[in-house]
Image (cartoon, rainbow, N blue to C red; front, side, top):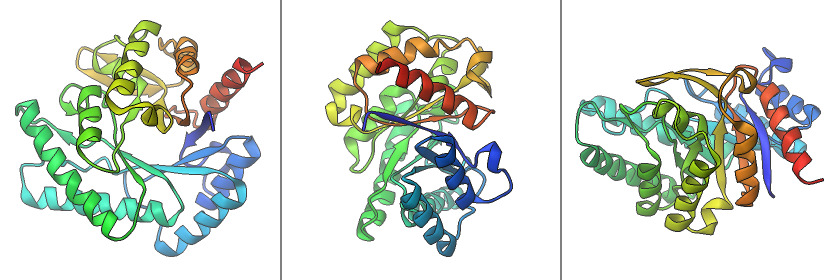
Length: 277
């Protein structure tokens, strides 16, 4: 499959026309993937999911999803924890009904607690989610996303460790977040090579053949991520990053989390295709 490229949510060209027309527009643009945006709510019913599934198959568009921003698998209050688990299960089920393959979340916050203790909570509750999905024969990948602030659970080692510990889990590597999380680090070929070498060492070649990547320009400071930017308005060395992807022969889906939606997806796709000539 190599890498295929897609946009986060309905393309600007189809804004206001719904998810099905968004998928049709992705194909008209020549892109191959789209990420459903469940960040604020799962805005697709089971009935609509059937239409989305049909549109994705008809257009050969691969669907992923970004899960709800409000989940926290290390919440202090039981009510918030239970709600987080329920939300994640619901989102995964709807994505599955849409024919999607992979869903990512910012999984938890440290809230001043030791990282190891928070990780144990994330592991425990992710196992509950995966077991529930497996009992219903739902096989979408659950993706802990690398996060943009050090107050959030989700550095690369944590995401990889969770993937080792729980079935049906692999990391979603957000290269912009890892750049912002450490106030401008992770912006060189050597750093990206070290990161992907670590993933391969710990999770095997299978992980590199099944990548869910997010990338965009990003504004950051000492406390990490501030806001997303378009690639060409940022300091991210995205062309060098793509060269590293090529060196590792990555396979999977790249979603550009940029404000210009389909613009950066088309930019990366064009640059990627140029590698092959």
